[in-house]
View (spheres, rainbow, N blue to C red):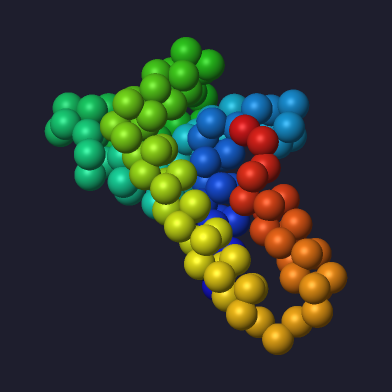
Length: 125
């Protein structure tokens, strides 16, 4: 379960900050789609009311241009929400690894699952 949470949070980060050459989606695609992710929720909690109004007004606008996407990305990043999500991802990966260490599995199965944890949570942005 914690690895699944970490995976989803990483996916949410990539949906806002991801490199299109890696993700195959335009940068900021989740902003254009208006996805209300944990990242966006945390950003809204941390931002001043005027910034929240701008975010709410632009979030989900499929015609956002690159400059507007960069502005929203910077606003989310500056709120501290991205750093907080990274900490939540790291915590969930630690919990998953602890569970893996205590699981009744062979060493090779543990190694494979550990590699899987790295791949799904450290995908490039």
